[in-house]
Length: 171
Image 1 (spheres, rainbow, N blue to C red):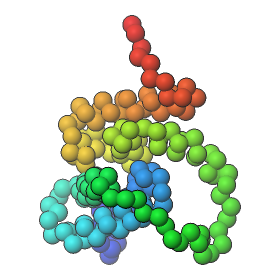
Image 2 (tube, rainbow, N blue to C red):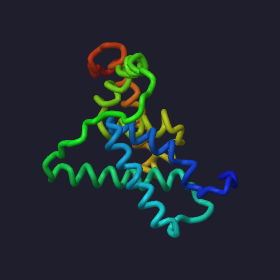
Image 3 (tube, rainbow, N blue to C red):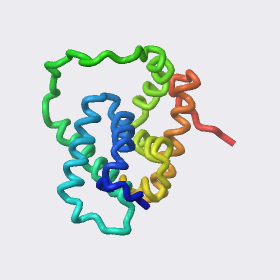
């Protein structure tokens, strides 16, 4: 249910799209590109969205499909090198300590498989239901639950300093 603020309903979801893209890709510039591509696609095809369906799920599905296509296409193309490493144009507060606090979590997330990382981010960070995450990723709900369980276990191991050792519990 969207508030009537005079803005297009997509606008309210932009911060969530940015957060997910940044966590998924680990690179601010690539994340912004993905969000922009997603917004362009959503805006140009907004007439295809069914009124009454979940707009957030629809937007995340678009982003997921764009990312999957980019990963698939990227495996066939050489990597790109940025020519502009000029940094921020405006002064900003020092955030070194913020990065230190998040660095272990970001590192652990990056070490998850893409399938596990997507589910952990959608359910854990974006607070989507299992069904919404399944709809976004185009997989059965049981697959979401399995990937989430394995992803959470792997994160626990990585954050506990076990180096990601994947030991099974035996009863």
